[in-house]
Length: 257
Ligand SMILES: [Fe+2]
Image 1 (tube, rainbow, N blue to C red):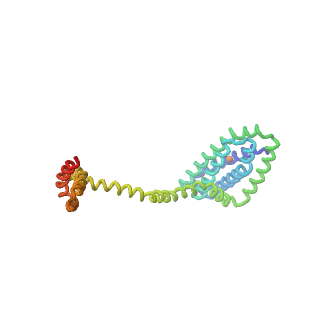
Image 2 (image 1 turned 60 degrees about the vertical axis):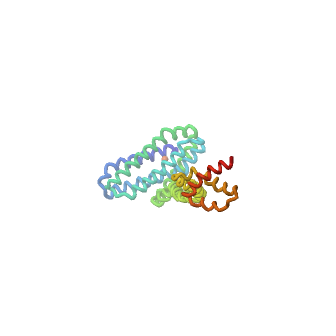
Image 3 (image 1 turned 135 degrees about the vertical axis):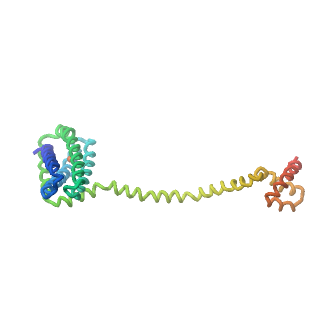
C-alpha cells in the first residue's frame, strides 16, 4: 500500500474511534476504556511511523517544507493530550474535555497532511517509492502497537518537553541575573554616597550655609593670607562660621581686591 494511502486509512480509523468514544464518553465503563486504549495505540503507532519514516523521507523529497516541522510540534501536543486522556477517569468532565481537545488537534493535523503535504509528496515521489515506504511504515506500525504502547507514549511526552526544561532553567537563571545586577551595585552605592554628600551640603543650605560655603572657604583662606592662624577653628562651627563667614567673605573679597 502507498504510504499516503496507509496514513489516510489510519486517519479514518482514528476519526471513527473519536465518534464512538464521544457517543459514550459520559457513560464510563470498560467499553470506553477499550476504545480509549485502541485510540492511544493507533495514534501512538501512527505518529511513530510518520516521525521515524514518513517525515524524514518527505523532507528528503521536498526539502525545507514548513509543514513538516509544524507536524512534529503537533504530534508533541497530541502525545501530551493522549497522556492526559489516560490519566482521566472515563465519565468525568475532564475525560470529555481532553477527548474533545485531542480530536480538534488531530483533525486539524490530518487536514493539513491530507490537503497539503500528501498531494505535494505524491507529486514529488514516484508510486514505487511510495509503495516501498508504505511497506516499511506498516511493519513499524505493527511493531509499535505490539510493544508497550503506554511506555512508548511516556517516552515521547518526555522527549517533547525539553522546552519546559529550558523554561525552568531560564527561571533559575533569573536569580543569577539578579545576582549579577547586585554585583554591580557597589559602584551604584558609591554614586549614591557621592550624591549624599551634596545633599548634606544642601541641608546646611537650608540655614543659608550652602550659599556661604564659598564665603566660609574664603574666610578660612583670608586669615591665612593675613597671617592669623587662630580663626581656622571657628569655621568648624557652621552657625558661627556663617555669620563670621559673611564678614570674612566680604573682607576676603575686599582683601582679594
Ligand atoms: Fe501526523
